[in-house]
Image (tube, rainbow, N blue to C red; front, side, top):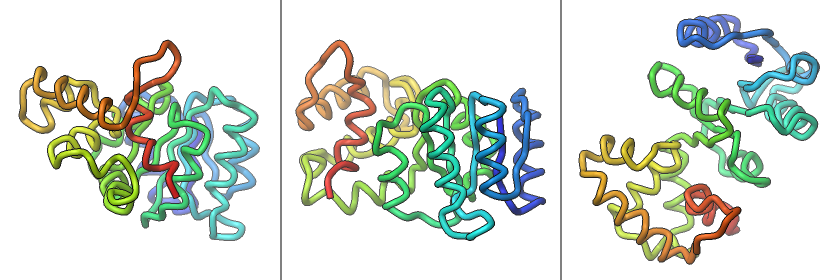
Length: 213
């Protein structure tokens, strides 16, 4: 795993959390250029990067992470940001949500959730911050099939976006798994997501509104 964060204290804190969670951090970077070099050189399962990094303090970290993923598609990318910006989420998942994640930095304080997100992305799954999912859903409800979903179905969809299984959704929402399965089936039907051999309907359900501008 490679970590890119220019705030030394935060970077060291993230490294310590990951080490305690049995992750191996092979390299750290304090600027985007170094992050790009180390991400390509070490071929990590997961690259965690701050969006805003030197030298430009703009989107340098995101750009470096996306470049690493372009050249090393097997590397999962988990982006951390102080603030939510829709365009960042859209760009990150533009080629699919497998192996990508976007969390607000405040989520790092929830150690279990942070480590679970890191694990999901490293395993090739997705991890989108619940607040980001909620805001994206809110922006596009009127213009997309998402508007057809009931409030409970939206809650289920948001939990799915965090990478939770049906059992995990049931536990999070305190409902039984059979009810979750019915909601998931309804979500797929309302979004027009038919079963195919190659498409991942759980991911497509979350991303169906992301691709609508």
